[in-house]
Image (tube, rainbow, N blue to C red; front, side):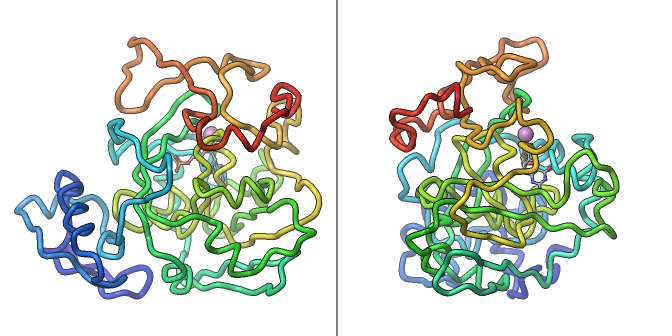
Length: 330
Ligand SMILES: Nc1nc2c(c(=O)[nH]1)N[C@H]1C(S)=C(S)[C@@H](COP(=O)(O)O)O[C@H]1N2
Ligand SMILES: [Mo]
C-alpha cells in the first residue's frame, strides 16, 4: 500500500526507505554524510514501524541530496503541520474556499508536464518533468510563507534556485522581467469557470529578483512531490513576497523587457502591486499588514505575531530595493 507508481516515473523508494517526518532531520544528517551517492543514491536505511504514517505517497526524499547552503534558506521555526500545509490553500483555479483545493485538485493531471521557457533568452525551449528534476541538485529549504490575507506557514520545500533554470536558457541583456503562467485546465479546474481572476493566473518578477538565490523553483514539500493543491508539479516560491507571487502549476516562463501584468494586479490594482514585498509598514487598503497568525500554532485567541519586513529576509534581499520608495512601489 505504500508503493504507488511514482508521479515522475522514478522507482519509488522501498517502504523501509520511506522516512517519516519525525526521522526527517536525522535522515537529512545521514544524507549530508552520504555525499557522493549521486542524485539517485540512497542514504543508509533508516526505518521504523511508524513508516506507514509518512504523509502522502510520492516520495522525493530519496532524491534530496542536501540541505541548502543558500543564506536564509533555513529557519529554526517549527514546521507548520502537514495537514495545514496541504489542507488550507489558496489555489483559485479550484475554488476560492481554503478547503476546495485539497478537495478538488486531485483531478489535475500532472504527468506528462512541460514548462516552456521563452521570450528574451538565447535558447528558448521546453523542459519536461524528468529534465526539471535533474536540472540541479534538489535541496530542502524551510521558508516562511506569508499570505497577504494575514496568515503564515513554515514549509519545508524541495527544489532549487530558479536561477539554475534561467541560466540554462541564457537570458539576453535586454531581459528585465520574468513572467510566470499557471496552467488552465477547465476539465479539472472548476474555479476557472468563474471570473474571479482573469485566467490564466500570471505573476511576474524583476529579473534580479528571479535570479536571487532565495527564489525557489519548488518540486516538492515535506520530502514528497508537491501535492496538487500546493501547485504540482512545479511552482515558484518567493519567500519575501506575499504568497500570491508564488505561482502554482507553472507551464510557461517568459523573459521580457517590460513589467508583466499579473492576475492580481489586473483584478485590483490599488490593492496588489507588482512588487508585493511583505511589508508591515504598508497596510493593505482594507486591513493592517502589521501582524499575522501562524497556522497550526497560533490559536484563534492567542496573540498574533508581528510581521517582519520582507518576511524576515531583509538581510538577504533588502539590497534589491535600495533607494526605492516602498510605499509607492508596493
Ligand atoms: N496558480 C495559482 N497560484 C497561486 C494561487 C492561485 O490561486 N493560483 N494562490 C496564491 C496565494 S494567494 C498563496 S497564499 C499561495 C498559497 O500557497 P500554498 O497553498 O501552497 O500554501 O499560492 C499562491 N499561488
Ligand atoms: Mo495569499
